Length: 230
Image 1 (cartoon, rainbow, N blue to C red):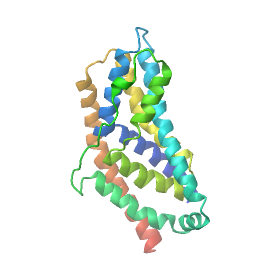
Image 2 (image 1 turned 180 degrees about the horizontal axis):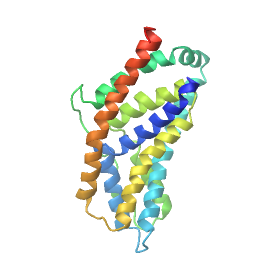
Image 3 (image 1 turned 180 degrees about the vertical axis):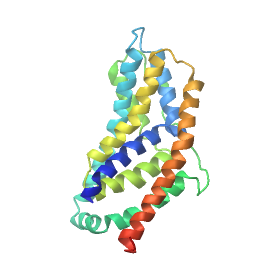
Image 4 (image 1 turned 90 degrees about the vertical axis):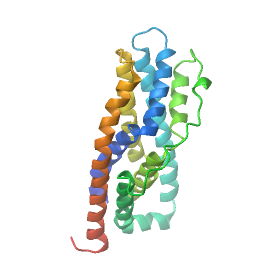
C-alpha cells in the first residue's frame, strides 16, 4: 500500500479538517477559544498565540493515541502480515461504512458529551493551560470524530505502517480551523454566531462531498482487491 501513501496523507489531513468543523468539536473549540480570548490579557497576539498552543494540544493528543494504538497493532507479526496482505480488502468496507455514516444513512445520533469544565482552566496560568485544555478537549470523541478517527485514520495508519505520520497529519488538519478561529478572534471577530455560521456552511457541503468520496473509494478498492473486476 506504500504507493498509495500520498492519498492516505491527503485523506488524513482532510479528515482532520472535516472533524474540526463538525458540530460537536466545533462547539468545543469555539467555547475554548472564547474563554481564551477573555483571559489572555491585553496583548494583541495573545489570543492567536494561545489559540495555536490549544490547537497543538489537540494535535498532540490525536498523535499520541494513534501512535500507541497503531504501534501496538503493528508489533504483532500476525496483524502486520494480515494488513500487508489484506489491507485494501479491509479498508474497502471501512471507507464505505464511514462514508455512509457521514451521509447520515444510519440516522442522526447524539452529538457527544461536554465532559470538561472550562472553569478548571484559570486565568493567568500561561501557555501550559492552553496546551492542556487542547489535549483534554480532544479526548471526549463525538460520534463523527470517533467514526473518522478510529474508523478511517487508524486503519489507514496500520495498513500503511505509518503510526506517526498519518495521526500527525490528522492532528494538523484538526488544528488548522482552530488556528483560523483564533486569528478571527485576534482581529476582533467576536461574534460566535458569525464564526459558527461560516464553519457550518462549510461543513454542510464538505461533509456529504467527503462521504460520497469515501463511498466511491471504498467501492473502488472492493471491486479491485476483493472481486478483481478492475
